[in-house]
Length: 181
Image (cartoon, rainbow, N blue to C red; front, side):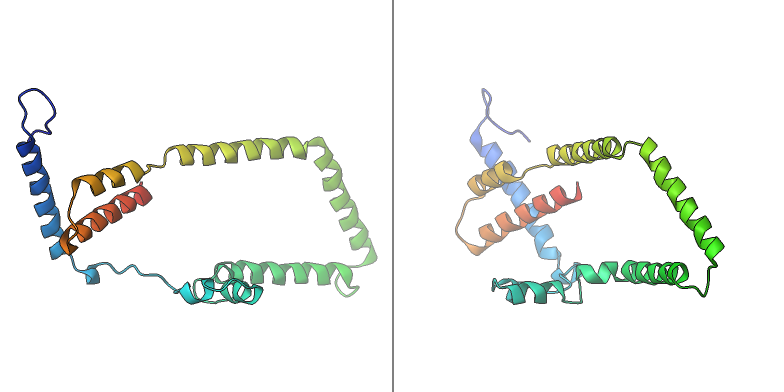
């Protein structure tokens, strides 16, 4: 199989290669049924996103299935219980004596004093630099499918349903590959 373009190459072999690819791809597409793909969106947000108001935004944020609140609720609940427990032990006179409270205050003051030895803004600067560097590396390694999509739209011609589905499915597979990589 040649790609054409050099001396002595004819465009008909390139066209035949393209037709071979298109026929294999179309057969694969026909044999694949949508029931084989169990992935679907957890919640359809189309109706809530269509209106732009504060109520619609809050309604979208507080929707339970697939929400951010659902994913952090367990950690928030555990943190709240532990914070309430420590606060009630420290602030009431039922659990700690005055002597134990003074010891705890001195102990926490010691850690606060030792925190001055570590320049927190300096450490935070290193952390931010590392995070931004990682983000930049990820962004530079993203494969963009725009040019290839334009080439597919150019080389897979036709206004019929079969050509349109072939172009769309090819681009969907390319976007899937981009996401997986």
